[in-house]
Amino acid sequence: MIQNERQYKVTQTKLRELEQASANIDLEDPSLHPRQILSQKNSYNRVIGTLKQEIAEYEELKSGRIAVFQIESFNELPTALIKARIALGMTQKELAEKIDTQEQQIQRYEANHYHAISFDRLMKIVGALGISFKHSVEIEIEPLESLV
Image (cartoon, one colour):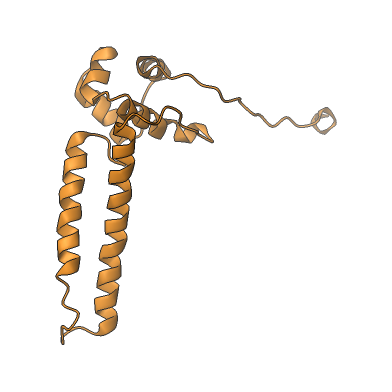
């Protein structure tokens, strides 16, 4: 997932390079078996497809047209936080300023998908992003007779 403008530009450059490399594959190269050529081409196309999807997702988020992110589990919260920041047009630096920390700390949080964050700091980020939750918490409770 593209998380900032620098990654966006790097991804665009990488996409152009891969598209050029794919176009330059010599389909008539006598030193390669046709299956090798096809495999090479397919490999490029898979990566190109992935990069295009990531670019499209980032551009869609940047457009500000997405205001709701559905998450099915708490494990999806880190990605939703990153998407929310992008959709708000907020940079990592701006988020850092809102919670009184360094930009590099936000970069580390996002790079590690918020795995090493305290609950208090997580709540500050949620507040800075203006996020509200509408989801219920579900628990599994064993029937009373099975506990005896």
